[in-house]
Image (cartoon, rainbow, N blue to C red):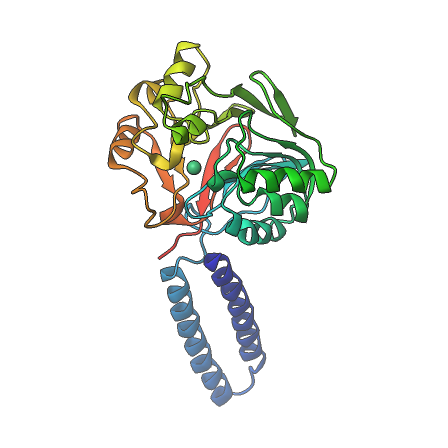
Length: 334
Ligand SMILES: [Zn+2]
C-alpha cells in the first residue's frame, strides 16, 4: 500500500519537472538569457536526477519484481495473496469475475474491502472458506455484506463458533446460496478452472487435536490457467498431505500456497516432491504467536527448490499469469 502511494507521488513529481523544463526552453533569446537558461536547465536536470535517485532508493519506478500491485491486463489472471497478517486471504481476479478464498480474521475485513475497492472488484462469483478457523473465515461475513457475492462455499465441518454463524447469517441476509463442496467440483472462470481436489480426512475427534482436525478438513483446490497451475491447501498438515499422495492426486503445480502458514507440521518432503512448486507463498503475520513460518518448513521448501514469498516480509503479493508465464509483484515493506 505504501509503495503504491509512493508511485503516485513519483508520477506527479515527474509531471511537474517536465513542465519546468519546457518553460526553460521557451526563453531562448539573446546570449545572456540563453546562458541563464542553460544554467537553469542543468540545475533542473540535477534536481530531476536527485529526485529520481531518491525515488529509486525508496523502491519506486519499479517495473521489476518489487513494485506495487499490478492492474489486471487483458487475458491475464492476477492471484492476490492479500496481507492480512496471521491468516489467509486470496483473490483470484480474472477478466470476467473473481473468486475469494478465505478472508482473514474478523478485524481484517476493512483492509480486504479497501483492497477490493482499490482493484475495482465489486463482485465475487464465489466466496470460499477453506476451513472453520477464525484466521480464514473471520472476515468473510463483512465481505459478503459489503460486496456482491454469487455463491458461498463453506467447509464440510463447521463449528458452533460465532465467526461461522456470522458468515452463514450474512449469506442468509443477502440471500446468497451457501453450500459445501466435494472433490471433483470445478468452477470455471475466464478460461481458468478451480478444482476441488479434496475436502479433508476423517479423524477421530476423541483422539485427535481438534485444531489439527479442522486444519485437515481444509478444502484443497487447484487452479489451472493455460499451462500454469496453483495449489491452495488451506491449513492442511502432513497427515492430510500423505492421504492425498496415497490417493494419487495430481499435486504438481507452479505456485503453492504453503499449508498452515509455514508450520513445521505441514509441507512434508514427500508432498513437496510431488508438488515441485517453483514459487511458494506463505501467508503469515509478522511476530506471530506461533513462530510461523517454522525453520523446518522453510528448509524443506528450499530443498524442494521453491522460491519463497512471505506476506510478513513483502506485504501484498500478486502472482500474475498469462497462461504461460508467471510474474510476481509485491509491496516491499521496510
Ligand atoms: Zn490458519
